[in-house]
Image (cartoon, rainbow, N blue to C red; front, side, top):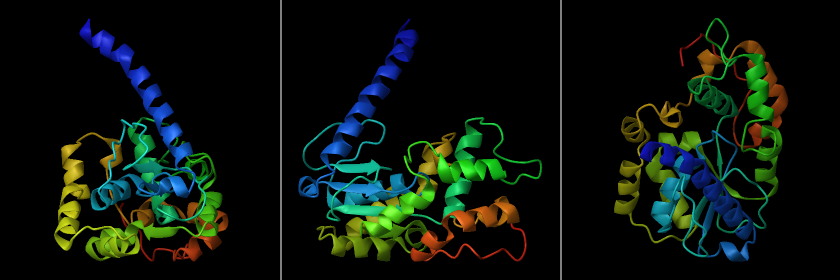
Length: 253
């Protein structure tokens, strides 16, 4: 049947996309070859997809999530890899590690992974450790990934800052990377890739389930917060995140 043929073809399409993605990432490792292209990197669940969408629009580049094509020029690459030379044409997307863990939990739970939440609805210690050390696609534990972003001297964009004041933060990127986007084009990009609108367009997609900045206050127990502070606290502090903070009252995420 046609449906059977399509289901058989999907794994091949995923394989082709993965091969193209790896080839493009390897190609763009060179700072020289990133001229005319752009890379957005970050630890998984740090807003990298959203940031890449906006970057591609404002820089006049092509970005095709889920359907990567190998091209030599005019491409915005979304990746969780960190093996890039130099700091030209690369942006590091960073998010409060506590929220990255919560976002990972929502995604895994939606895919029916067991052991994500405990009986009280909070994220388990085991899952928090998994999210910080073995999250698929990261290739590094969270602490080392963040440290690489710092050591490499890449420009970085905090997810929370982009949420709170997208127009100002995007205008700063336009100036920093010398893109030709106008104020009107910045407004159009913000409107086009508004997260709440994307959630409406993609009902049932776990990726668009929530875009929060403070769900951790209700989803992370004191024990998990202690684990996070011990594992990534000093590195997160360099990006402006104080993981020693504790919520005064429990809030639902």
